Structures are given as C-alpha cells and as structure tokens.
Image 1 (spheres, rainbow, N blue to C red):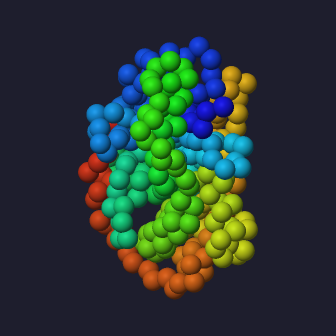
Image 2 (cartoon, rainbow, N blue to C red):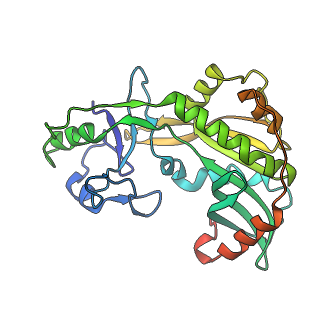
Length: 279
C-alpha cells in the first residue's frame, strides 16, 4: 500500500486510472486549476499530494487544505450561520479577505442587489508536514510505471502536530475578536484527527457542545472510504465557543475590535459571477 493516499484528488488505490495523463495534467479538482503545491527546486512541477498515511493512522491524513473543498460541502454546512440570509439573496464564496489579525481563507456571503446582507468567515486547516513527501510520491509513480523513484532523496516526511495546532489557535485568538464584536461567525474547518489532538494537548474541556450563536465554530470532517476505494469527506463533529473560550485554550485574555465597514468594503469589491455559490 502506498503512503500517498490521494494524488491530484484521485485515490491511489483505485484501479484503471491513467496516472501518466493525471500527472502530466497536474489538475487540482478542488480548485479546478493546476495544483499550486509545487517543488521549490522545480516550480513547474506540481506535487499534487492531497492525503497520506502516517504512523498508526489507518485512515488518510489530509495535508492540503484545498482537499477540504470537496463538493463545497464545508460551505453548505455553514449556511445555517447566516442568520439574516433571506430567500432571494445570492450566495457568494469570496476568498482571502483581510481582517484584524490576518486574513481569512473564505467568506460565505449573503448578497442582495450587490450589497452584503450577512457573512461568515471560513478557515481551512490541515496538518503541516516536516520533511518532504516527494520520495513517497515518486515511489508510487514507479509502482504504476510512470516515473522512477528518486534514489538520491532519502528524506522522509513527518507530521508537525504541535506547530500546526498552536499556530491555528493563536491565529483564531486574534481573528475571533473581530467576529465576536460584529456578532458574526468564524468557522474553523479541520480533520477529525486534528480536533482530537487539540482536545488532548490544549484546554478543551470547556468545549463540549455547539451553539449557533457562538462566534467561533469548529467543524471537523472524517475521510470515509467508498466502495470504489476513493474517499469522501463527512462531517464528524461540531463544537463552538467565543473569544474567551479560545483564550482559555491558550491561557490568554481576549480583546475586542470592530472593523465591519472595512470587511464589507472588501467583500463587495470582490463580488462577481466567479464568486457566486451554486448548489
């Protein structure tokens, strides 16, 4: 069994795939364009790894955040958080919007006549790796007669659990203050493995239930194996809290900021036919 579970969005366990064509196209089905994960030494080559096996994990571990965009399910699962959305409003997905404390990956926006009526921020987080997955990728491609394994590269990869978890909590602590002050919702979308780690390593005992009114929502997803050996994202768990709750996870204190006008100005300037969200 290959350590690479999915390459360019396709399960390596599926049979009958034209891997030579897949690798040549370098297409990411989740972004619907060329995969943007490239080799530093060869930026014209996309690595294309979506998920891998590591350690004792018997299910795939996601290492690319765009893998979470499958079927746009993560956006559909946030629709209930748009409390002032009404029938007739358009829905848009707006990427990369700046807020105090950094930028948010996506905004799910309810729009009427070109004006923002409501919005929710959505952050995607998968595990960062240490080392390189390139040798494992090339080993799989050698097995399917597409490429030769790179014998000169002996490095392997690991999972940077601690840094990934601490970084995302610190970022959330900065960003959630703005959403809480605006009475809006920020959603962290992660894999179930990462949520389990957060619960084990940080102060998460106070996060047990989910309330729609909480500004900080955490949605975790599992990778469910399908009959054809592919994998499908399924919502596994939801919990929620506020800025004080995130601060308690880190042992910090929270402060509030209000930047509503700046956020809405950015959102409205980015609305287009390309951002329209369609079911």
